[in-house]
Length: 159
Image (cartoon, rainbow, N blue to C red):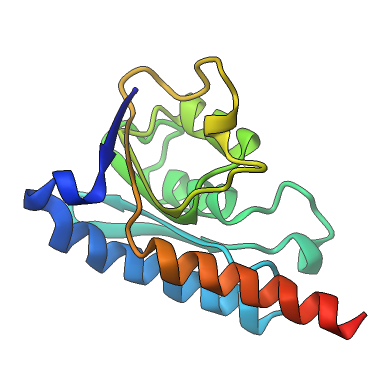
């Protein structure tokens, strides 16, 4: 697994920013549905083949994370379970469950916005991603983090 900081990979910055904006739109859909505002998309050959946002409350399903929704949509589009030629864009660092799913799907790249120091996969000290998966972090990190913080702040203020 190779980590790349956003500012170190100039050749793909514009593309990654464009697709992260699409993932952010999915996060806003989750926010509108009063779900935790996390969004994800999967891209293959420059085309979005899977979209998802959190649906855990709506579906009463703890596994209905944005990434899982996007994996399912992309797999259905491709007609197979392996996404080894695809990139996952997600607004926050994937949790252990979603990182594990990316391992089994053999996703090529994971691009995420803000880190999740409490539940993100990088907190695990053992390999959880496929060895060939490249990780890019920090794209729209501030906006992604702010969206989540504001959501939880509003929830706490309602209590």
